[in-house]
Length: 261
Image (cartoon, rainbow, N blue to C red; front, top):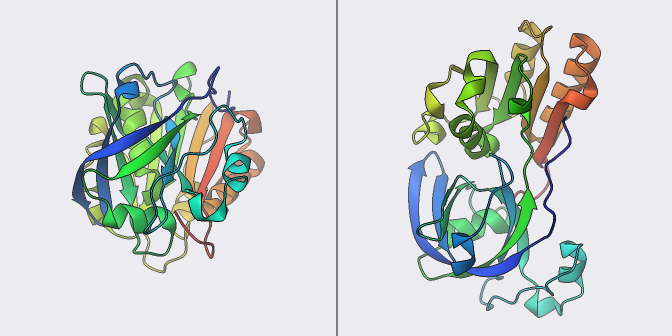
């Protein structure tokens, strides 16, 4: 049940930046348009995709289509032509307009994704590589846990919008360093416990909150954010709470001390 939702076949195509807006707290919403998005269908609420970004000063060159291992396909390209690749959640899909909205947490130029997003303007060309989805809490009827940091806010919001039926049985914990990053999110009216991180250490507030929470009846957990934080959260849920590890979905969106998106 905690296994990701995969696609039968991959798709890959070019997109154009249609609009860029700042949502607050360093979160930027970038809208992409492509004819292929009119017929695109998501496999899950927190659908993620690979964003190909041309390196500074270079034109976009797409990797060979049809390759199962996209990173290997990029590695086989000439160095000067290789795009950067980062994975993001589709916040919203508008088939009538053939667009998707993607919310990206920026942190200056400390990583290729953030650097690109900070400088993105309408008309920029990028690439799309299909991915899959992670959340499957709607497939059960037991209490569920959703825990995240700011990088997983767009995914959390997309899940709650798509599955209002889980709201009454969901415990939701969110750790952020700046509450302004939540300005544009209503979370479908869900009861979200927000924890403010003040020491710069991912999980320093969220993990103690999970340890103190009553979670013994959990049937499913979705935990996404910094790699060390989600790994510790999963360990607590499995070893201390007794949740079946096959029912704990955890995904490290980034890792402290390493180059971020």
